[in-house]
Image 1 (cartoon, rainbow, N blue to C red):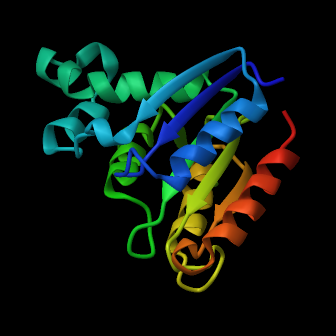
Image 2: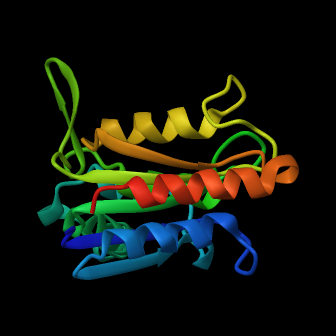
Length: 193
């Protein structure tokens, strides 16, 4: 059994969302002791010049304004650090991830916090975690040349140290919804808790 799951939804749809339904099915399948829920449509701000300056300022030297600029980022990072497994709904928009998910990534990918630079290149600091990506697309086959979401998510998660990544795909929902949802539900049923 997974101890703590960070359940992230990204679909702009709240009703009738395949990715939301499937992320909940994954969380139910994993049966964690604790679930941290984060709906990224509740506004994740874009990073700013103040945010960047604060991020590269030593903690004990940050001004009140810099601390405030990083407050949400610190909270989002703490959620990821607390989780054993991340369940991320990836609603594929225009071949890629939703803007809110990119904003979340920018908030949590922090030098010295979730990754560090070494003489051998960057090293992720969130090792030993698992991610389950629930990818829903209207027309793009997951893993195809036109899927810029899945590869990017694997890469950015690996960059912060999360390399154990499973994919649950509900793809081509505009033309193959019944078949795709059935296949996705079968993939959820096969996930190890």
